[in-house]
Length: 376
Image 1 (cartoon, helix red, strand yellow):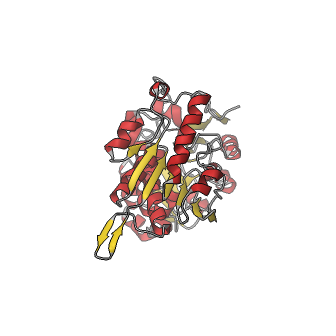
Image 2 (tube, rainbow, N blue to C red; image 1 turned 90 degrees about the vertical axis):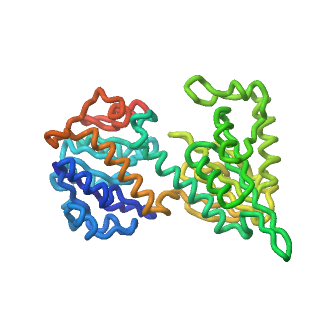
Image 3 (tube, rainbow, N blue to C red; image 1 turned 60 degrees about the horizontal axis):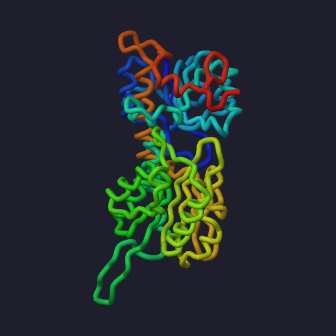
């Protein structure tokens, strides 16, 4: 069977869906791996490195896709690439299914069996395939590094003969994978870190990293999480008390990093313009939700802007800004996933539709969009 790895064509996308390490492992599964020339350039991988790992190099996407049984990309393929796929091709990629429904429809019409890696179930058996976590982890790190590079002061407290420099204060809003890594990174750089989240269970995680948890700790908050781990909607009275606490907290910060995203919906506003106005001149906001409208209404996607003396960074693809490492993790995620699809004895495709991982991740199958979150 032939597995094709395509070069990414979207502006600003430097990642690649396979590395020499995973190409070697894929050939070990009995697959014939073909990589489009230049696919690894953004992640500092030369064509020769793929060849040394046992892969072949195709001059362009059409040659790579010719008779391919499996296709790997980072972001979803374009219409021309989809048209070059044969019926029954298996595609694994980040397909942004909530926002790029035209791509899903085109994949279905072409007869492609497409797996959206965003939909990999959050279960223990699928942790090694969890693309969102692997990429968000490094995005959280990069958010702090970018903030530190832009901030006009040092992060740690420094005691010198000329006087003492106070430590920076960083506030992380949203304690998922990206938020936890942002907390850890800001702490390593010496900042005084606080964080907030709507889920009470995150308090222990925040405090275990040496940060301060910020929330109105009343009885309602203690009951704010369902048995499945999701946040409950809070009363208007609680929301007002929490908003006042957050506003007072933000006023004292030098760095604010926001991470709140809701699949298929605009990002919730966490930092209002009024809050920005209260921040100290030279403060920095890094908005990790910029691609979905931003957690701050002043955020502009893929731009760094200044408003009311505050720098607001709205990069939409922080993972790509660390392409060497994010590609390595993403490629391993894909290898672990495709290992479920290939029969170890025969090397043939064997899609077990009773497997909850496959059922959870499949977007298109048999000419239709089948995932319940986006079909219809």
